[in-house]
Amino acid sequence: MNPTLIAQLRATVGDAHVLTHEDPTADLSAWENDWRKRAQGRALAIVRPGSTAEVAAVVKACAAAGASIVPQGGNTGLVVGSVPDDTGTQVVLSLGRMQAVRSLDAANLTITVEAGCILQNLQTAADNAGFLFPLSLAAEGSCTIGGNLATNAGGTQVVRYGNARDLCLGLEVVTAQGEIWHGLSGLRKDNTGYDLRDLFIGSEGTLGIITAATLKLYPQPAAQLTAWAAVPSLDAAVALLGLAHQQLGAGLTGFEVMGQFALSLVNKHFPALRVPFMAAGAAQAPCYGVLLENSSSESEAHARSRLERLLETAFEQEVVGDAVVAESLAQAQGLWHIRESIPLAQAEEGLNIKHDISIPVSRIPTFCTETDALLKREIPGVRLVNFGHLGDGNLHYNVQAPENGDAATFLRQQEAQVNALVFQQVARFDGSISAEHGVGSLKADKLPEFKDPVALALMRSIKHALDPANLLNPGRVLHPLNPSR
Ligand code: FAD
Image (cartoon, rainbow, N blue to C red; front, side):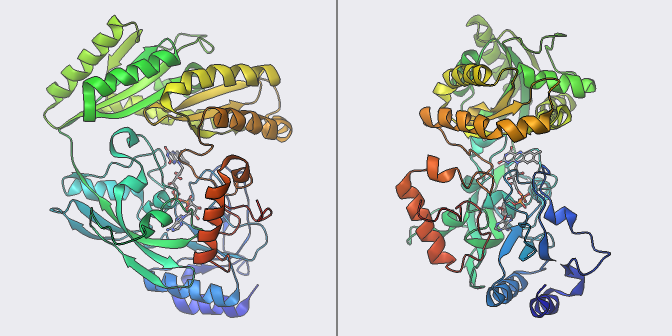
């Protein structure tokens, strides 16, 4: 406990917005435990400022007291980056109260919001004004735009609109010294030196605290059509992606792939969802489901005819075995719901090891064939749950414990080996060990092995220049135990 700091924090943000374990009635678990329940921290305090000025004052107070800060948005991150460690010395700075939409500039196609704005509310604000904010991911009902930017989130529409970085024009940031950088530019061109915005995006709260952002808006499409195709192999899925790029052009707004075993878990745990083309007992059949989305600025008829023509070509080339085009919005949402239910079905099946990797699209089929065989050879009985944003070369290549085995024991005994095998394969195929979830503390110790040493040294220099006291989210992204590596 640090009574002076706590008193200062209370004076800054108000008693109601500082929670500590001193108060026996306060429940801090929502801020201290991560989404996957893999980490349970203990905070000195949870502080919930209501304005940028309050964030700056909180940072100054913590800096003076030498207390490190863990910025937190919706706490949906998957790499243990948003929860405190277990020392009871860290302050969790939650942006959850800062949710305002500050302005919308229709002619400039931009919206400016505070960092704690829930992604879904941001989408709705854009929609209400007749625009599209295209960032979309399964956690959108809980995650915040600050967290999305801090992790450079991806999601389902990256193939057309890019990731969070591509959607951001300007930032407002509180630095590690408690100063405010007013960088809320709505400019699409600004070559006046180093790009500070891009430095903070994807820095996972280690360089500064994002308090607001100016983001790009797009015209709403006149129609969005969704299709589900059964394809015989990953090679066929990649071929279908190539055809979709050729025939749909900028209309291609989503391209997801789902392995048969991943779909069989949805079928098993959520049978009401009715996975298309899912034959009973086909859990290990060598085929994949592909979810395709085609958007049109013209009309639904236009979107439908182009999608149907694409599928006809794919049938002719024997790239697709079977396909269905959603007839209504409800049907389309149902198909997307199946895709988004895979992580939940996996959780129902038991503890598992997650990998969020990217590989050049052209090399994904060989990567999977080789890595599947390697894992099955080294760890007999292992079950592979493979799905992801194929359009972006991003796979969630997850590993489920052998059936009837104890998953906790499997994780304890095999996780390190599984990770080593998968990450070495990723490196062999010129991929990345984190495509969209970030590094957090889960992968911080892996970075020295898989990141270019010059890049890593530059990252350390930047961290030291911006946060010399290592106050902001220490130990995340850059591992503290091996400073020389
Ligand atoms: P948090 O979890 O609170 O924080 C994440 C990181 O950002 C932490 O390091 C934290 O310190 C830092 N941070 C948070 N807010 C700020 C801020 N204002 N300033 C500075 N640093 C900050 N991710 C994808 O990219 N694509 C997906 O498709 C996807 N699907 C998901 C599906 C599910 C079911 C779940 C649970 C998660 C999924 N994620 C996905 C991961 C997660 O939702 C994203 O990483 C999201 O961007 C995190 O936002 P958040 O507000 O919850 O951030």
